[in-house]
Length: 473
Image 1 (cartoon, rainbow, N blue to C red):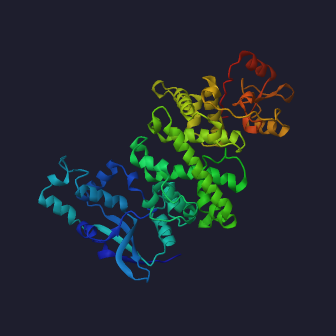
Image 2 (cartoon, rainbow, N blue to C red; image 1 turned 135 degrees about the horizontal axis):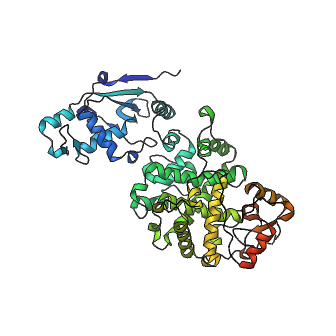
């Protein structure tokens, strides 16, 4: 068991006044995001101090200069949420509800009440000495074992290359770290997608926290990493949180997949990061051309939905055509996508949950694929690829191979994509869907739908787009 050199300040009887006079970095990179705390939680911290005499435990690390001398400064390991609540209360930003039910802000407190707060002496601070950055991450994880540490907080506690790449992309110069990969690529700055979030140009502010933005960046980078790592498509991995974690760290905190890949293939690693950044550039340019610009996307679900759809388009064309080359009119595309999303999402007011709504919250690869198909088919039904001005060339390969059909058969669990009845190999056609061959739909397993012969004929004779039957059996 690892033993650390620690000290308990004033035997656990430090006052709030003394705490506020200490030189402490309360927001070092990788530590807990105070935006994740709710106003209700912050108010409860003050009630616990003023009304209940709650013992607050915090953990700090000493900061040393280049010669190894203690600077007199500290860096928080655990306790930033509680400190922020105390600072906000003292500056009048949050109220206190007294035992008598009075709701008071700092300026309304009596001298005795202010003294009661500042002289509160149940702040139990443990100071860790001579910790490396890696050890600070280990202590953070141990202190929060079993508590509500988010996945992003856990991953950020590791001092590794991918963490710094994500930090710079999301927060730029405010990240407090450097990424040699991004510097070498000439992209060592906050990406404009996240700049727009910080400026409030789009999305409900309640949807935005630092660590949720980290997860957006991780999701997108994971897709490009998966492609570079084993050249496979990403249906089974775009929503797989275990895969995100395995990129950062292996079993028993051994090296993760990213570090192993980066050490062996630095050039491929750089290309992966640049491909990800260029895709983010396209997403930003496309979303700005939506009907109401970036503000058309009010939630993370809408944003992540259209990002997944854009990635899906590239996958449909084997990754050989970028979405920027597939879609000639981003304004029409984003408008069509938003209309499809709005129409197909659950009608909560009437207690109706559509098949598409069922898929929204699911994680597995086949469900991600079905959601893509639902959106694509609806968009096609209402003007289709023409309304989105997609003009890809036809795939010269017209017929699906036996291997393509086998993959589609397993995906559809041996059932017709139209009527959902069981299929038979001697009564089955392979159909280009969701993108028809005449519109440039590729002849790949991801664009293959198996139908009964008569269902296929009915579809072509009626000219209707076949409605996908969703099943979670």
